[in-house]
Length: 567
Image 1: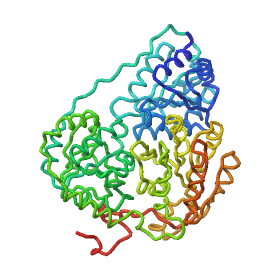
Image 2: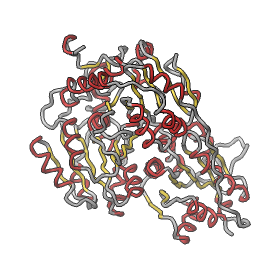
Image 3: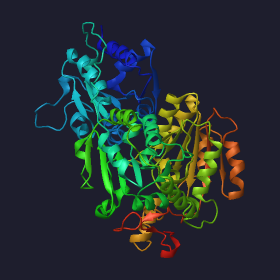
Image 4: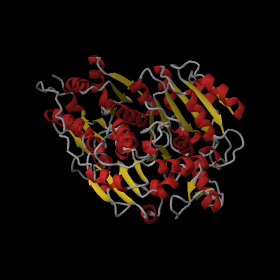
């Protein structure tokens, strides 16, 4: 059989339902095979970066590796930002790139390029993938793709790239099977953590994106309930516990909820599950973050433990196995009642509401996030871009138990949300998906409005338009004496409602608080159709509270009088 026909059937056998791509010469054979087979939907986008972000979101939502295709040269290179997003945020994905014919590869010649659009994408991608290979013969492709799908979901998930020359794609191969060997679960012992929880008076679970990547959200909820331990979460774990859950405290870190950071300061035990404790979680003073409390760090990668924050008790384990063991043992662990600690956490939350950190003229972004949540129960996911709006969303969205929070954390790529929403909308169909983006980020992949329109995707797009690159502008205000080069000076944005209308998508704008409720009602009047709402906010609104540089995460701006903090 022709190799590309085997690939088309293999992908279908792995439960791949869609591939994301932008056509190019070196993948025409593969696209033709997929089209003829008719078992996998081909989703054509308008930039390969969008294909890679859509595959990222598909992998996060389903647990099946998302798949994106690209031609050689610029097509393959354009995938790299999304490949890096998958790598840093632990999203399972397989990227298949077309390459020039083997006879056109430069090999060891002392030249830059031999074939047209020839590019060594394998070498370029290696720092951003779990593995990358070029197929040197048709016979090895089945084994490479099987290994790619196995590796993408083993341990800490991530992307794998397979580069296939065009003459290899069109070659004939003997019939091969499609089976991918399953990994072997590694046992885990949760006894040390339960022993610490039994002795602690003010414990917290610090939950990172590893819980989501391990498909362990339900296990984590049950473990928190079984041990009666409150939860703070990182940006990547905003959806692990629903907003209304009594054990959910809130977002910690540089732009975290003040009450969550204060809870960290008062806890005596911190159990870290699937978080790498990066600087946005701990602040720059890791010594102050760790001082006065025991930290137990559970992770599937040894290199993440005692990396930035030293002195942690290490437990190397796959999170599902660890949580399952913890649930088996929790009933016999002698865990104390912690009503006083939970009362204290409720006091902190009441004292420092997320909507009272700043006075805002016009639409208050944190209040708006609560209003948006109230009308978006039908949404299966929020796809959130990068910038101030990302912080407002993480601080204030009221996520329900079955909603996903999808954002670019490690890569922090502007332009992520719209193509990620495309992948999520296909994966979660028929449930709608909400995009939350800033005016700067939305322009980065604005061309994908055509993909939304062409496919009639139920994506509700919110553009928080402050007319500037707000996050960097806020940084310039603090550290560059308000010299706003390239964030205000040299920057501009269009009327997004007019742009969406040009693409055939219903759109409108809102610019006053008293008009928000009616605008949101309009947004959802056709739940399964795309729509865009431009939300005009004041240019100088900030993402607050924010940890002050060089201070512990409990010290946040705006600074309040010392006696304002009870206890």
